[in-house]
Length: 434
Image (cartoon, rainbow, N blue to C red; front, side, top):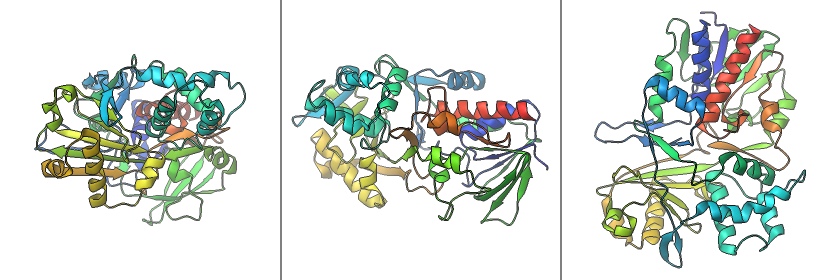
């Protein structure tokens, strides 16, 4: 097979690009380092369970057209997640009745930044108590770490202002889950491809991209086989592409693309540790106040955010740590993480540790920063980097094309929708150049 286009990465962006190229009868070879497709969509299916286990992407944020058009095309069902948040306050779980109001109080001053940029942490220190109480500022810091997977000392305050304008009122923008998991979307995208023209090569880790105008050669340290094509769409995660060329697992460009790399360093691939605990029973539903619980927040906890499977009544709780909280958990064993998670949950719900530990049937987890094929969960913008994404999304000499959640320019960066949209955009640009 002599492909018209090579695609590096079989995640959401790569498959979305392949879907477009397949519809236009182009020959495509997709190279994927993992032994599976999906990338940071990582859905486990156990025939004994009634629900998928999402170790990676889980939520559909709002109603992005790119995602919902595919759901309709593939006849996939998604359901709304009830907005029922509680937080730990004075040793008790209390309603977080107006999460948007808490955030708005803190970010109100971001609209006055103008051309000035600074880290979110510097912004809070400068504002001091002008816009919000210490409790509200603490909640905002925890939100930035969890929602953006970001270090408040590094994330751009201007980027957060743009994000807040994009997502609008958090309470009015519903979140959704796919009934059968995000993995079903990946499977349907794969099945939609022309099998004669779209081929996959798994467990092929790219080590070097040798290129000139309209000519690309892909090499791997794990295989002696090389591949050629006139165009390549690179959908590898930002964390992998940011590795210096001499680092193990890095991708080298020959010739190098120093301007692209410089812009890439204005983004960070934020760390996430996600753990899912399956219990024998949904013990929290014994408490009338927690029966309809969706999310719990405790900024002081090693896992500061937890959620249930509501509206489904299932015995699962998900523990989430992002940014510095995830960094603090880096390198810990599964056993240690399970102990930390149970201790955190026991404190959060005022239960004894031994009782909760005795209810555990299974513990699943994934440390995305430690994953050698992702080196992080999803991207955020550092101070001064608000123009980096569109610059990174531009093709180089109509030969090197880039896609992925970090390169989305539609306002959906850091999400599956952003990955899908960027993959479609890159494919359309390739078609115009062929």
